[in-house]
Image (cartoon, rainbow, N blue to C red; front, side, top):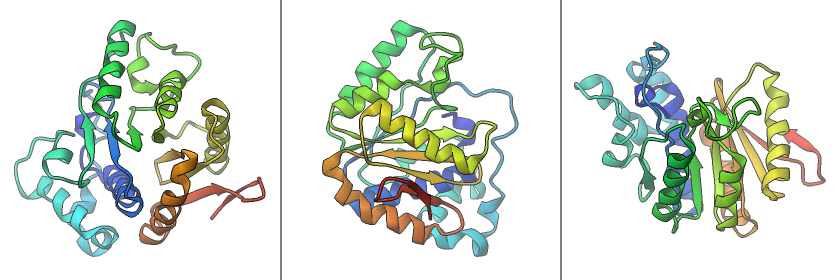
Length: 243
């Protein structure tokens, strides 16, 4: 997560998703931002939606009006505003910058586990998503990813997981069930759902004792964010289906 993207259209969908999951399920949500330093790219400017309330406000009016402060006042973009503006009521945040260095990354996650230890559901927001084979943990560029061992540790601690995933250059309709299946295999959960938007996906890995609480929340995401967030769940008989 980079501060330069705070409040763009992708953030609106992301915060909207988390708000529904947390509020509808009543699970305690923790957010591990995996913040990295801003870069010189100009692709954090997708905020025209904030000037078009007739098109966008109805998905989540309270969230929309909070984010509109970015265009009505001289506000420095900073992900910490999510906490200051209470964008997700009762959420807990871990807001430290993550680095490539392996020893510092280990320290980072030791602190994250402690800060978010009381949370039922933890959101991981790496720049790119889940690790790729060409960039091992601790190598240059690794701060942009969350690694299997880190997700496994959170799940081992009894937490359900929500994970940001940037779309690679593959068929998107096939990618979500593919990565969901890989998560089920790597994490050891038989309860994995996916959320697809125009630019990114989110994967929800559920503890067995959280499935019931999250079921209505997942359904509400589909209704409230119809046309913006597409829900994918494995068919109850075992095969994948997208709805």
